[in-house]
Length: 565
Image (cartoon, rainbow, N blue to C red; front, side):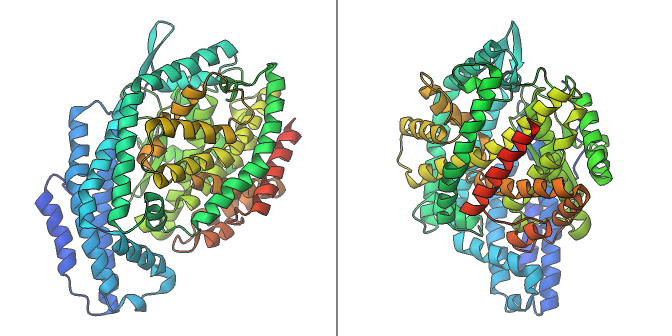
């Protein structure tokens, strides 16, 4: 599972060690006179030219660190960015936003092209407080500490020291005893790091609460809704939580009975609640994984495969597991190069196969956007849109899983597992969202109360059909394995919202595959200055997570699974 980790995949067109030089470029933007609308548009272009150079260098340094958290030089470069460059950027971003918003020519800008930018910058001006800069730096330091701890985890397995993702992959094993062993080892590992994780989370909650108070909000939840410029309300989220509990969880309980029967078990335990009906991992070497995914993409659309092969040839994929590598997986854009980089730390498993397909949805989206509109700017990036194309790619490739599972029964099992995952994406991230609503509206909570709340919410949602007796404490502390809670607060519900859109895309694909793929590409290359609803519409689906939509797509998903049977 080793893979070459050469670093020549991003451009450093600015020396971030030269702090005075970086500041001079930012200061120069502040001093440029803006005396007409054409001056303002030129200024915005000049500002973009500077910021994308900084962004690409910082992104590259961050990915370098995630790829090797144990390299002292790489870590020093990354920490310099976080502790020196990031505060400088925050300070000047605030001044540049003020300059933009104060310009008398702002209201003369084309609303379709610049309206979203104006709204985002206005909200940033509203949120900015000088005293929050050192708090944000400290927040990032805690996130870095989390990545180091998780990246350094190894577990002894049958006499060998294995990376943590390998143990997680054993939860998919056909042998129930192996799954139980892996589950217990993961639990004991979390228990060992729990004091450090509690300390990190306790401090993060207090830091984030103070950031919100400083900005004039009652709590960090309310602050984040403004910071994310969400196109829906807090109440909409609570309604979504309830609608999923009402319509999706009963269907999940029915599906669990099917899986329980196929497993031949009397009680459905947490180690049974994974992709365990497949006889073996879909691959053993990263090269085999890449060959197979390339074939699946080619059968869906030639452009998808062409982009994948380009990334493969140019060192833009790092997919294997190894010690010192940060957990999880992501796709990130390099705005100067016009490229995307996919990072994943997974051992051979069904999940790792799907994760790569998921990240390629992001990558195709990014490449299409860049080719049509140039660099995707930070203010345009909304997770509700991005995740539509990652989940959508998973479901467009559902009928090609026989690339890895050529036997008919195995193929059907793989399809069921992917659709089962679609179910989990309707409620798992949503439960995580509810957990964060609770955490940040109750900032005085204790570590014990946090674990108890996590267990309670988990039991209401994904663990509803599972016998959790005797494992309450293990489940309660298992939040430590979800990096979103640490590094990406309130980035959860978007997965569930976008899955509803992706299921509509699958529905369209079943009727007309060619049209659905073309709609996917049209939406993925759409003007991101539009509303979320408008971009969903260009993709041939609706941005809708109301009760009727939840009920309808839940019924559709259950029907598709039954048809595979």
